[in-house]
Image (cartoon, rainbow, N blue to C red; front, side):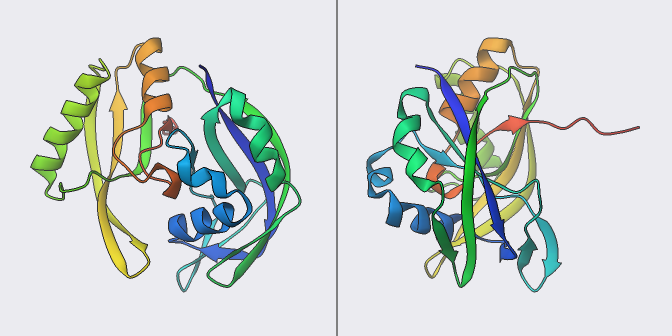
Length: 196
């Protein structure tokens, strides 16, 4: 079944830079059924760094959920709701549905795989997961990153996968890699080409 990104406009001033767990918690208060949905992912909200561990929200900021297209209706309840992320308040606006694009290069801001924190072992675990998805693209491991879940720091890596076929590109966007998908991990988006 095809997946889409359901992208809601958001209005507010700031949100924490490390907001994956807080955003998942806020969404699950409105939609408790998200706890049981292994397919649904919540992308990190983009913003401009303001210092002091916060992001300024802008006209480009969106609350985006990746989900099977037959689940769109259930998530429309988020429109018009207020979410509080560690004391930062935002209002969810009207959504738009975005079809996943097939591109040869995808990137994820953060991928986490339980029990794998060292780069070499992590890369081996990633290659096993890609093999299971029948994806043969080139893996580029980026910066080591952490994020907070309650009082625990979770370790993962920024990542890109290139040289993908159209089918591999869709498979990777739909399946993702690793865990904590509802907290913004393992979700792949098209790589933005660098300007020369």
